[in-house]
Image (cartoon, rainbow, N blue to C red; front, side, top):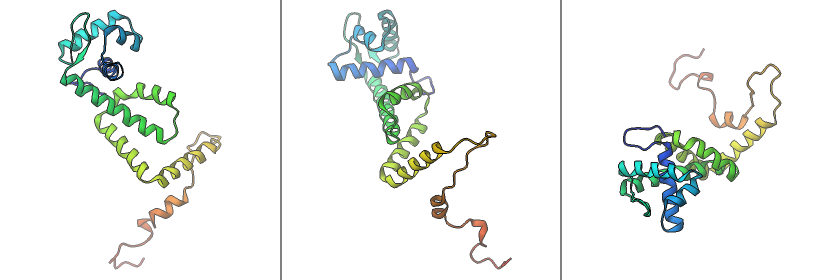
Length: 182
């Protein structure tokens, strides 16, 4: 996600997301569990949780459990929702869980809220219109089956169903009420 002065950075978001996950699964989050879960050194965790504490995202006391503040919980919830949206979107296209996880981790922090909202709308659209999803998946399969052009030109796939659904081209007939019969 693009950083702003009121948003934590990518690494901080990863920590907040993981702290919330640990709290939900284990009932609490400790620095040692966080280090193990993120596969980082405890010293790295200590530095980050101190920073997150100073920024008001969590309450940190040495040798105590980590407690997210209201501000920290809000960020963690936003991150979780973004993650779920991306997972929902990629699942529509049959992307396996391992690929989803890797791709989501790679892109989730770089997407604006507007982009995530568009992906959520697109997922909802395909869920509401499964025939459109099938048409897209068929289009994709046909495209993959085509051999690349020997000169590297872009592939052109005839898609008669889409052309028929769109109706006649606006240039093929004069506008209604037009006097011209050329």
